[in-house]
Length: 488
Length: 112
Image (cartoon, rainbow over all chains, first blue to last red; front, top):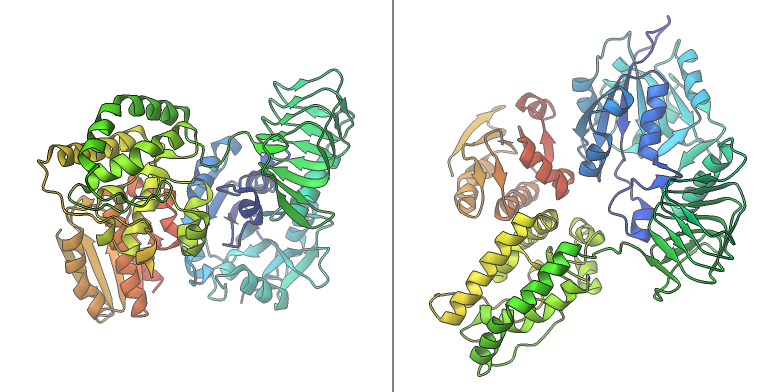
């Protein structure tokens, strides 16, 4: 362990752990596919980067977590903040110090920030850290509200200490190590912003709202507020928010971009997440609202509302693009003769059992024609109505999704599936769980790519036509109505 | 699918270099056959993916099944040298959380 008895060079490098692999509860409750939910107007990760920039960092090593592609896309190379950002993966079970050594200058005279992308201490507490480095290997900021000291995820360390072999891979283990170490100084932040679950998310938003020194409400671009509506500050309205007549918003309300608040609504001490519709006459207090879900903080309960006239998401999860919907309509009209022909060819064969949009059990000599007739063609209506994508992971019921392993289940956080997938074109009975998982993951990645959809569609229709014309020597796929059955 | 297999650390580590530019339905069976000896003989399998430009769902599935086999033996599978398209794909489908991915061979070997 290194100790320092003389002042060290001010730090210009930071290691920002985007997330420590801990669950982001808001994602599970409100169905986000990432943790970049804005707090007032920007996500916590952006606030963390800005904090580091204000602390004088010019190089930020971002340790990617669960939402790597989203974080990388959001932060870019750091030009927005005039800093250099590099990305690294965090490998579970591997001591962080092993990785740190290859990124940072481990000489004893340099300092390095370690920061948590989901938490933000007060800047003054962080600035204090520099003064307490003399004689210590590091200085950390601890949570002021916890009964026992809890590490905030932020601290200033000597690079040589960070590169030592003692840095464990999990936040909990590292926290224990830091709190016990006599060479680590502890500073308390007056407040600490963390927004991993509804209660802290609400308090975080309201804290930042109250800290903004503004006499009136903050109103985003393109808002449409009825002259009969009452806005009681402090209130933050995002961009393109619509507020109906006789509606009261505030005090202490944050409304995200593209929300529609109907007439006669009362909202107080709430956060309404972006793209949410709040229906006529609804009263909301001390809650976080998003999509069709209300997390009531006073009652410590989460409720989902099925009635879309009360509450709903304006861009629903799994909704297919307008292009998909039009394509489905055109396909349904264009393929009507093929459907008619397929029905005639298949009418003497046993009828397959229908399982929603699932790959139906194909019986007899014409499995593709059967699938087209009884599964694909009828399900085009589901794509038209926006419930399914044209291409995507195999649609599965909620019960089936819950039986999947965690990584696989997470694919369905942002989609309800698609009609066409790679697995459909191959024989699912020959695919093991790894191949089925890979196919679903790839289908999710390609569900917005026109070329992928076109290739799948052409491959599928080619197989159906060969089956109908009797020229293809297709193997009896015996596709299963329960694609999860092989997973055991 | 041609694989170059060399060993390091007294045979404990097998460094497998994928010579093909694609890992897809056309060559996954060969890949699995060829990588099997490395899994059988070494505790740690390090895969050099520098030449790989394209991976499809079959390729991804074969890498997952390789990982499963290595994990069953309490071993380690490390990937390095991913091209940008392959890396983007791995991130998009969240495979970076499942595999240990490194930028270079040195970085991968340094973590043994």
